[in-house]
Image 1 (cartoon, rainbow, N blue to C red):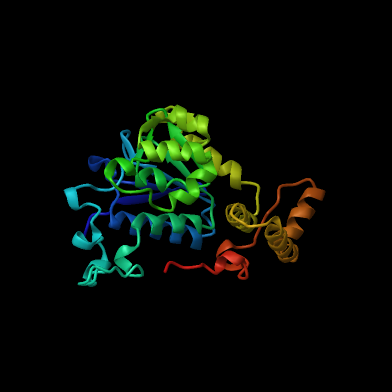
Image 2 (cartoon, rainbow, N blue to C red):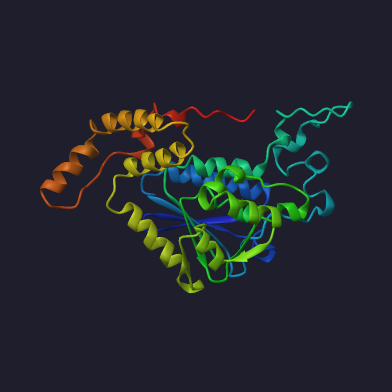
Length: 304
């Protein structure tokens, strides 16, 4: 059995997910992708987890990008496969050179991870402790907030490797930093420091290495300690999904439905009564059991 490439730990109400291949600069693999998705599944199913923090082992790298041990064939997935169960499948390339674009081998592994982070029902925070390059940078984009160490370096280096941005970063990155900055970083492929990332809004704060994880834990507590877990989960999805809505009436439709639904639940009654009684609220609704089943994002458009 392969050695785990990630590890999880609990710190208060936070789950800390550590990418744990420090001798390989925490380089990304299919196994790592599967383990990170499994950690998010565990967090969503456990009401004791209020937030998820991603970080990397060691001080050199958060995740230095894809594992390049396959050399020139690193990104030729038709030749080398994906490093997971899909490798048992036949090639998506037919004898006449046509490509079956729906074939599982075509789908980008980094995008599988970012789609799962996007769907998470708990706040996700990146504590970026070192180099975040390629998928190491793009996997952080659907996280709700990113904090960086002074050691952190970022690079959307795809054009310098002869490929293109992946992990749905062409959707996420311009929304976070604006189109001109996204184009600069992705076309040039240059590596930049935490100060530039902070100035552009990619990260919310920069900390000394020894203070980074404590800052992430404090941020997780600030976001969740006094809020209804279900309200936080729904708010997370509303903000992300409505950022891409075609018209504000879409937001009006769904916040109307959500307020109507949440207003009938125990947490809404407790929120009002605790305020009137001038005491901390004791919320009891469960994310795992009482997340609104009719939410529009429950119908994933799917990958085809």
